[in-house]
Image 1 (cartoon, helix red, strand yellow):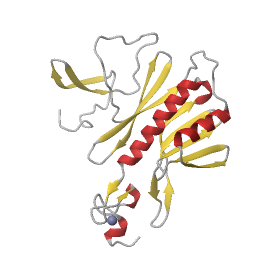
Image 2 (cartoon, rainbow, N blue to C red; image 1 turned 135 degrees about the vertical axis):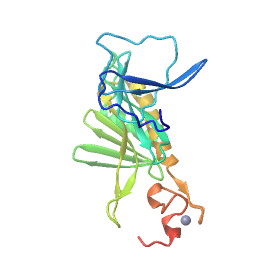
Image 3 (spheres, rainbow, N blue to C red; image 1 turned 90 degrees about the horizontal axis):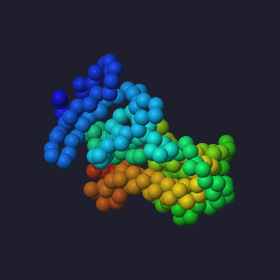
Length: 227
Ligand SMILES: [Zn+2]
């Protein structure tokens, strides 16, 4: 196998393809390539070893005791370095009746964000949180979406907000306590991802969001380029 994980992919995949990359006494690293494969109905994985999975491309769904977790890659830069994230979707309420009201949900989001701006339009309630902007939380009916705040250039002088979604929850079906915990951790994850993209300009020493960097080392103000 070559050094690139994305090479040597079969064009035709009747079964999941497992390739062992490294094997040691207590560790095995393998590449798994699958295409719409799933375990058979009623089958549950129950194994002795621990397993840690990172999705590099595409997506996967895992059902763990009634909670469906959606695994997918989020950030994969040019060098192939990866910041993976676990997005979670709940499909069952676990039978609890202790659910959150609309007002309670909004209140909880305000509490978690501490500093934020809030807007409403097209049936979507949007919170943009923290200073500088790091996370976007949107409520549309029973759907709650958490995204990493991001901007991109849409033409030479137009910078548009471009949220990168990390999770969608059907919040009306999730018990209050669980929803609050999950939301807190997802917002924290989104903030960390946004902060991880900030770069320090080697000329002025300021830390800037990626859209204001000219290249890896110089911000746009210091680059001398005209935007
Ligand atoms: Zn600078």
